[in-house]
Length: 97
Image 1 (cartoon, rainbow, N blue to C red):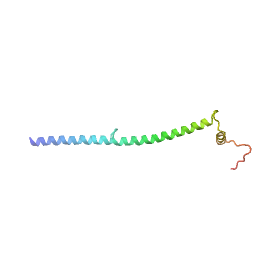
Image 2: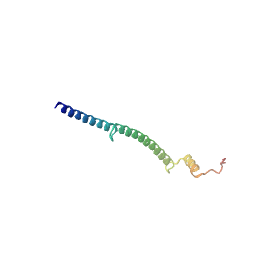
Image 3: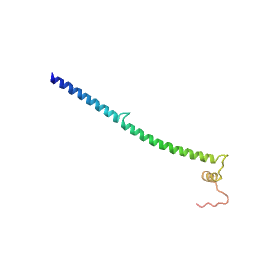
Image 4: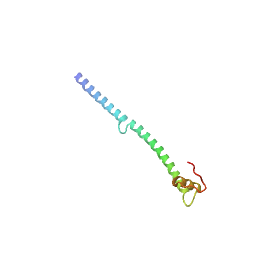
């Protein structure tokens, strides 16, 4: 009888150990595990940087749009954009290539 008890207790502890290993593995590698959390935090930081960069670009574009609007016309910016986009030059300028 004591031998049977020791076999059943051994099986019980082996199953408990295997179950503990399974939950430990799931806590580290699972879909809600530690490694996935680190990966998500890294992606969050990268996306926040990209969001900030895009916001700065949108602000810059809004500033340029405002400066080219009828309410606020920046002649230097208009001249620069006409030269760059349309290839315009003034009559008194000489182009050297």
